[in-house]
Image (cartoon, rainbow, N blue to C red):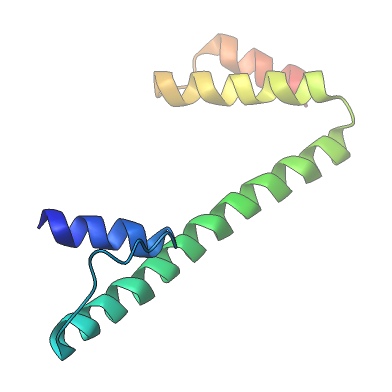
Length: 97
């Protein structure tokens, strides 16, 4: 299992040292599957990251005031950690809009 993990990381990170490689047809098929799944997962993660960056860029552009937007994100973070909307948070949200 350690060798499989090592091979997966070196292959998916495109380092590919070459010290471990598939030798049989079954190993080659499994290696190909690992590479395909790795590319799909990496693409999904990068797509999510790109959407977050573009959303933030759009929000900064629309609001014009980065300090106000930063304050809004702090309100959201407090709501996430607290799990409920207390009266102080409601007041902050109303001030934002």
